[in-house]
Image 1: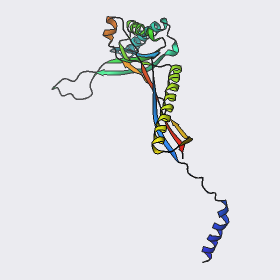
Image 2: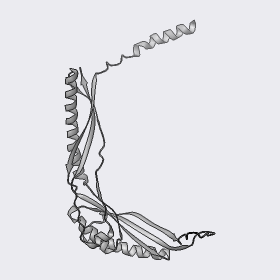
Image 3: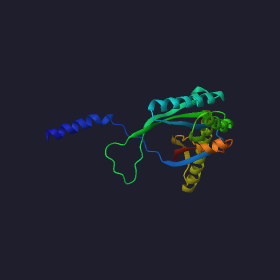
Image 4: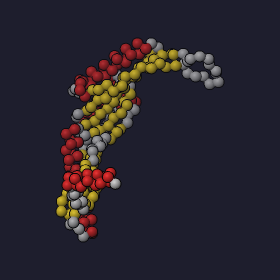
Length: 236
């Protein structure tokens, strides 16, 4: 009995420190996406030099020589060092082929080595993309790993802001339609959540034989930038 009285006394003493929670607001939540299109102003191409030799050191040496020629050719076109980034360097052994129907004991024999060096090149002047590809292959690259168009940082930011404005406007229109149908009034904005930007790219593929046969045509077309928002409106 005494324990119960003590607990009641504590509750009475602390009761004055507890504040009533604020009244919950009535809200209307909508989500919307806005999109804008633009012509990409940058491109990225990845060149690879692949060399083979019976000796590992020679395979690497031949590879380095050819890749240096590729890089120098790219620089001669006006591409800066910061636009040329090494993305892969590898060296691995090549083994004798497995003959059908032959049972072999022990490890397979190494018959040579393959060295690969890949550089990713950012092309700031998109109208020069075809020439860059042609020059890179002519200088010694024997693989074009990838090629894609993209927006520069400044243009991507500009387009995203436009898409964001469209998304907010679309959300407002949705909220107006819903509030009219529900016969309620929007009195303010309670909360806004923005989704992040996903940078769009358009990829193209080239075979080295096609590049060497004729000047490489490239056409960037348009890419779409989207932004999404979720907005809670206060209603009554």
